[in-house]
Amino acid sequence: MIHIKSIYFAFALAVFFVGCGSKKYFEPPITNGTLKFDHKLQDKIVSANRFGAVLDNGSVIDANGLTYLKINQQSTFLNETQDYYIIAQDCHHLELINKTTQQSTILTLPTCPLGASTKGDLLALVLADNSTNIYSIKTQEALFSQKGSPSIAINSLVAAPVFLDTLVVFPTLDGRLLVVDTKSYTPARNIIINSEKFFNNIIYLVIDDESMFAATSKRLVSIISGQEFSYDADIRDVLYQKPYLYVLTLEGQIIQLDKTLRELNKIKLPFATLNTIVITDNKLHTIENRGYLIEVDTINFAYKVFEVKGALGRMKLDKLNFYDKHRIYYDKYYFDFSKEGK
Image 1: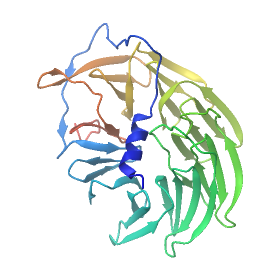
Image 2: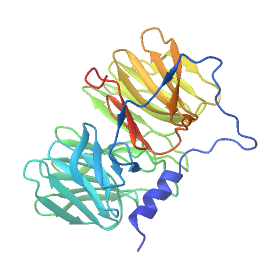
Image 3: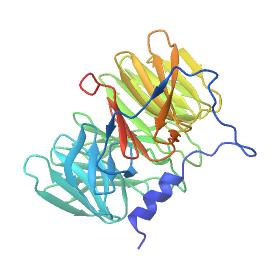
Image 4: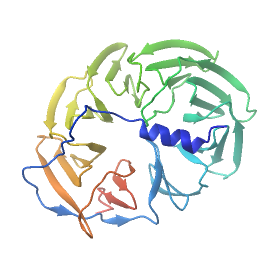
């Protein structure tokens, strides 16, 4: 049996590869000062995905900060919904912890879960074999299952299914959105975002009123009231902050788009390896692997570069990180950009 940690480690390694030959690094012509991490965690981050991070002591950080959860070394935090914490115990067992009663429900699965979400009694899953599945949490019955094309290599940023009123939108591993009717448990629509052979999973999926935004590592698509727009780039990460979308690229670009994916503003930081996007008070913050924090004014797109200092000088920021709406977590530290955290 393949151990789930080995699979997730392989996914974490299976990120983007750029070019060959000698490596060049980001060196800003000027910096605007130095910063130190203003908060410290109980332990260092040992695993992270789009929805949470796990510390070496088993503590779990979700979108709202440190939770009461403690999980073992074999488990992986997948997601948090309104009613449940969702944890992969291993490649064949998924645990749902009710946030109100703290009761635990264990489901047996055919292979490793990568993306998960719940609504009421329904659990939606994307598995490592690129199957999309709906289960009844109460009866543990499989209500729907469909397998897509196998994916040899995927990006570690795996999006989660999104529930609507009577539909669930599945982000697949082969660059599609599969829309399933939760009344009849039949496919209602299949939307192709991109058709690359490798690293083509949906890494970002957000639905806001009549708008839906989805991205692979090569293409961002916006669907507004049935009309589709696309934007091609080597995408590292995406964030929708109403009414704009923000994109980080492999080339060190920070791009602001409107809902129709028209470029409004763009900054290029040559050779920068950017991670995380946090926007508070009209300021976008992202970290650069060589030890910098970039702050962008989202109104005029002017930017500042700060060195992130540690005990021995500028810190390299190339370990696991995680971010939520207000905080950037790195190793055993974090920045809190909210008013409460300053």
